[in-house]
Image (tube, rainbow, N blue to C red; front, side, top):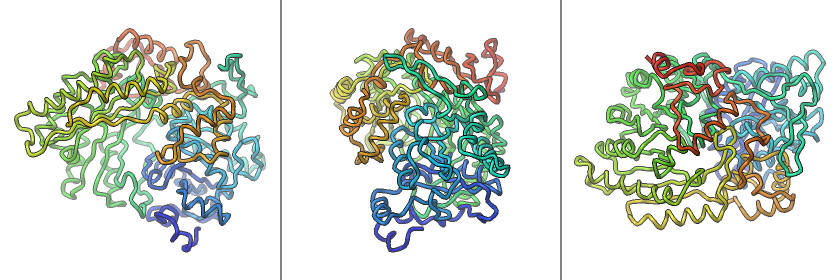
Length: 625
């Protein structure tokens, strides 16, 4: 552990002490495998991650496996650690990472990649998988970014693809068994791990390239490992591992509340949204299980807020029953309920009256595009009338603040679509003044938050080109010039940051060289505005002879082998391609609960609405009834 005299020299020493109520400490003599779960960002962000909490619980449920937590030290602590020669350590035991059997990273966003390398370096673990010895830990990657693992493939021994509650204990059990039988070696273990469903061992697959730099093929080095790696899912969410208690932080974190995961998946097919595709099929928890989990977490944490989490909480088929059961005891204990992912087409006065945190503060909706034409292209099932009606409901309830999320750079986008964002904001302002029972004590405030479109793997728009920097800047200036009302605020995301994200989102293995060079040049915390440097990234790409435009700003060929084709998420490539073509025709696709489009996710089993091509809207409606 870090001595007190060092902790006194850094900001927020509570990041580094461990010892929180709810942490898991085990007898090392009874432990057969040690697992360091690393979040490549600060303690405050990592402690709020629900996935880490779930997997921490799943691994520690096994008596002979001990999972501990590790976070990226802030720059002040890192400087002292390097000066004093102190290696990166786990919070529970204070042991350095090299003492662990597994060192696993959750990869939530592309701009954390340099932090991964920095943490490995601080731990004294060789950065490249090929340089690790028999005594080094097995380095595992997982999370959303693992669905295209190629840009970071050289640094990881194994990737866990999909949901890890069952998968991570399984690979750890394989390790324990091989150790006990005396058959373990690093290479033998990786070979056996590659045979397990949901595990990708990149060193066991050779990649060849065409003359133009595109991928020719993936070649398994052994006949007994799969040609593609299918993701793992939990079929029955009611039986899924869920924490009964959590490590309670000593300092304020991003989400100091109970997070109650209601379901996984999404019934909407927004064509830009990776999460809506990779988390298919939709699987729900029952209200009784959710209510029991909420009570248990409240008793063990004392938090005064419960956040119902999912990609779109209003799509939960038993939302009324769930909220009624929660309110039967949360009102009495003054616990507020939060529904952070409501859609405008399900926002009602009844819901506002029921949910306390919906009644307070501002309200947020995500139209994503400024015109109905473009919303049809991206398959965003919200129209102007529905949005304005939802806003009026909020205004009638006393709200004065509305935040609207948009994205610029969608395929087929025109200047008219950009101008439509400003026009829609003006209509929301007008809707406020057209609401007779509005709160007249304060003026309305409409905030526009506009991100840059980034083509993501496993979406119908995965083949699209990202706007070049000049075009992104022009569109931002165009929209800014159209906003003349002081009641409308406009915030936009950095096009420079979005471009680097786009490079690594669709990159291949050659980008590992760029990440290694970036680490050598000291790049880290790229997701933090004060550390990100676009010019430094351009210099890195130039130094290693890679053109970022090749990855971000070109349209990929429909027949091209994509870097993520080695992964099978269940949703078929033919379905994604058909959705791309429908986008250019301006055709919308129905939701999963209206008609099964046979996207392919049914083969993973467990999906509430997954059937066959012959299923009709009426037969799916019967499932809901």
